[in-house]
Image 1: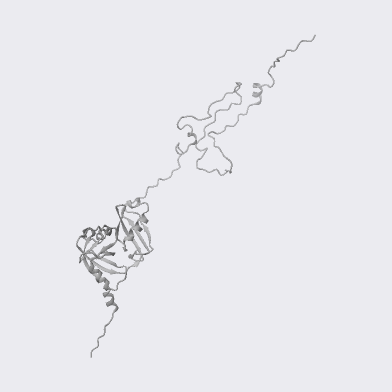
Image 2: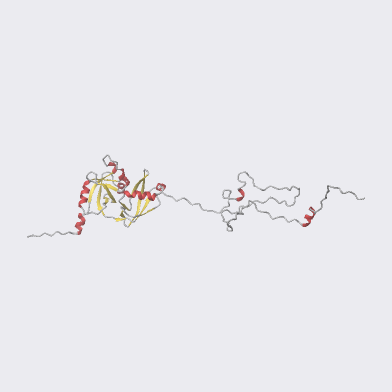
Length: 310
């Protein structure tokens, strides 16, 4: 009698559960059929033949199905998910941006292997054009576009479609690994400055004398008409010149400084800033005053004449 022993080696079991094959890849625009498959271009998933589904179903692989794509001729690789299994046998269809990352031409060979990736916690992107800043809420647009992706690979340049325009973003960093799964994950998203972006130059602030536009208080009244209120000379009705003061001198730019708060402000009190500086009253000499004016020196007249006494 002979007895046979079957050894279940872990390495052999792992090799059997691994999907690995080669396909000729084409862009989605080459996919035959009446249905429009432009939605494939908006994400990071590929279309594989039905035989791949049969082979994957026999293997004890984990879900979601994620794959590593490798171009052995250029030593370039990326990661992706699968959208459908409707391609012709021996052929797979890739988004155009993915073929560019892999440096693949139409009909080129690509190695497809099943992989397990860690769930993403952080990712950082760099827009490849400053036009991405024209979007009102770029972070929300990116998060919505990433719903069509299954995983991210550091170094890839992904493409998203928004308002009928293609925006390219380079994956600068991913955590906790260089290739991560973004299916049903809570991931923090950050941005680098776009390529070609220049920060606006900041003009140095110099302390200069205020001009008319910057608030010279003496120029408000005569800016347009050349007229200043209350600057003429006055005359008394009785013809006297006593008490007439010269016209007030205009204020200089440093008399009233704009932008400085009134720290002595009290609630309920309104302060008006005048356009002129009050002049000190002229002190008249006592001798000069006596020469000009003598009290009770006028003559009186009576309407009724008094009679003479006998």
